[in-house]
Image (tube, rainbow, N blue to C red):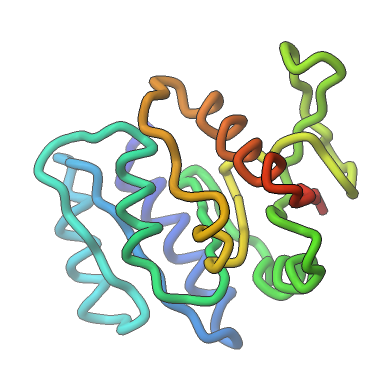
Length: 178
């Protein structure tokens, strides 16, 4: 798998579908060495919505995401994994879900659990879930005051997704999949 191709597909598809929304795209180039950094720099010259932050070495997933969270300025944060290709307007529906003050996190890839040890994907399921996978993880930026940024102690990104979901649940917010 070529990381540059994933980044290109993700960025191009996301930018194409956010035309009707006021959008700021913050990309953290996490020490790439495959041409991604230059492609992102070229993109910033073509699209004023894109801002790139380069780090000089590979950081953990949470550390890199926290840089993006701290640098973001928008009302709504939508974290997208570079493996995601956006095929339609996701921002409108996410904003609709987040319009409910009780909702802390929204996204399409919810997880359910009966025992907090084993999680399963709620493929195609909508409604309240126990956690959200960070392939697409959306929340109001103002919630950062309540939940904070991600803990940087996780080595596996999936555990990070679960932990950050529980930051929101611990503060009484719902996690909703759609």
